[in-house]
Length: 120
Image (cartoon, rainbow, N blue to C red):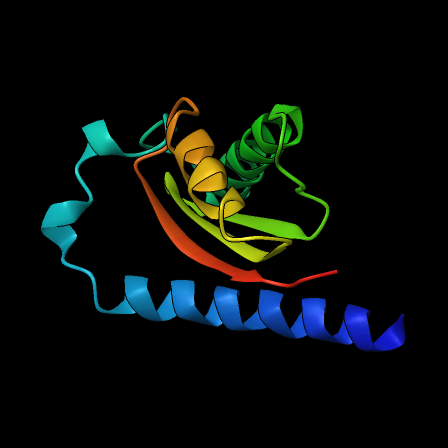
């Protein structure tokens, strides 16, 4: 159990680091107001963080509702409408199911797949 928790924690950290490196190299042209999560222009870090958390929660809720998808070990991160779906699923047929579900959630701009297959 401890090994599985460590692996999940490590996967989350790697995904988070991957997201920050993507944004560090991104163009400012890609960040138009129309493509971001609806946050007022005077929003501070707390409001932005809250919007990101709420979007990730919406995606997780959508994943849990999908029949045929075991989202027990799926991790969702959000930043300005960009979603990273990571963790593991039991078989490869569930990956496109998870990605398409995440893409269908309101306010999601893009979805990056970081899922792996972990047989049980």
